Length: 214
Image 1 (tube, rainbow, N blue to C red):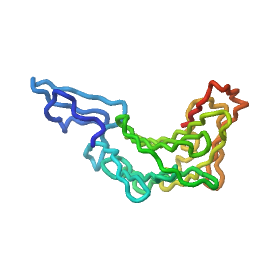
Image 2 (cartoon, rainbow, N blue to C red):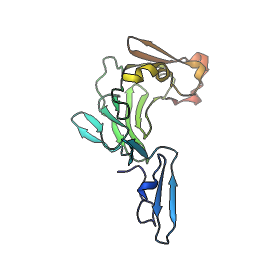
Image 3 (tube, helix red, strand yellow):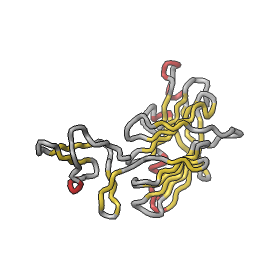
Image 4 (cartoon, one colour):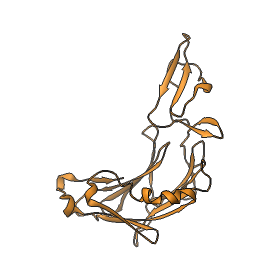
């Protein structure tokens, strides 16, 4: 399924007028309706702009995205974690997984209620900590929600890259959002990235929770 459905009152798409972020549609009155999106709705497949489709299929213990998208992805239900490979730059891949000491697997909840976002949510993957992975047309995002002051404020993810994406690893390691940046740190040792929020530096109050890190 394409990210953007056909607008009501239109007939056919003017495929030759596609852009990365837009579509053009014919109307019965002879006018053309242009639809623009903040996020990409098409990807360049060998010179042809195709609809981005983030539909998923469940195979065994994994959700898979392999339709028309600039990347393929596998999200493990018991994760949280994912593996993604670029279709634009073959050989580029990223694998990341939350480190859960002695923790049993938790099955993810699949949420398709927000157009353009395929969401996988793990509730209380650790005490008072939720994790969410979102597939977007332009990226895969991870969100960690620390729900109470008593929850752990330090979490770790394994982190492996291949291809040209490895050269951009320092940038990826520091994409931690903009909430209390002075209180968020990331340390990478032996391919394990540990993200720590220092509540003392940030001077968090109970009303500040839940905290969300991207």
